[in-house]
Each structure stands twice: as C-alpha cells, then as structure tokens.
Length: 75
Image (cartoon, rainbow, N blue to C red; front, side):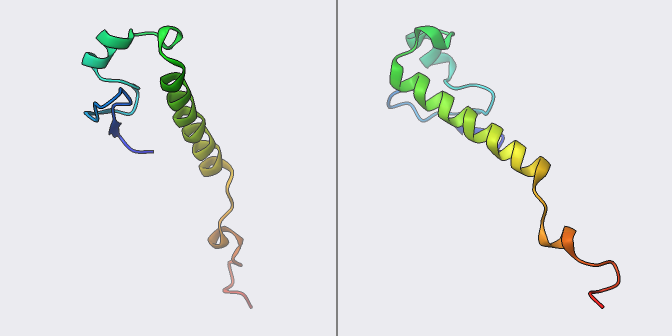
C-alpha cells in the first residue's frame, strides 16, 4: 500500500495521496462523490479499494515460513 498513486481521471496522471481517487482538478470535472462519476471511473476506484483491502487482510492473517520455523533451529 503506497502513499501516492496517479489520479484516475482521464488523461490526468497527477500524483495524489492514496486516500483520494482523483485530483482537485478532476474533482471539478467529475464531482466529489463517486455516485456521479462515470462507470469506468467508479469501477477503477472500487477495484483499487478492493485490492487494498485484500492486501491488508493478507498482511494481517498471513503466516510466513519464518513463523513456522522451530525455535530450536529445526532439531
């Protein structure tokens, strides 16, 4: 989960913080609520959010090989 990503607005690509889908300029164009956004933009933002939530769940519950090692060095 990075701190920044590119604005999802059409032909924008401005770097913004991860908490927002679009920059201030694109917000004026599309609106500040996802309900009024075009379907493609809503889909992209929802897909990113799903991926972030999935990664957060994985990081919380994943068991690594290091977690499975014996404390006595495998003997």
